[in-house]
Image (tube, rainbow, N blue to C red):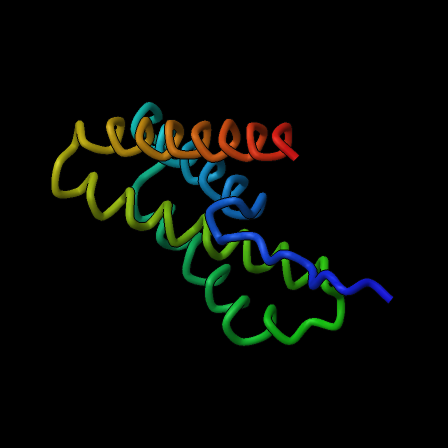
Length: 118
């Protein structure tokens, strides 16, 4: 038997959070750049995705299915936050997308440096 308990990784080192941030970055950029994708479209997409996760995704038998559901719901929550902020400040959505991207890159770099130090 292994006496060492498995180390639990922090939420911010989780790959799912990084993927969710990148999806949110892409959606925020599409919303900011494309005139035909409205902010209401992003919200209309987010509502069923988040509801699916809350009502069914958490109880899926497949661990991978639960992880995908969680990641998609989180990315849509980030996208809705970007839309809300963008509706208050139009140029701020690009700044927010940049912050999301920088944060995701930082998480990747920190994850790689901690993996190399082991």
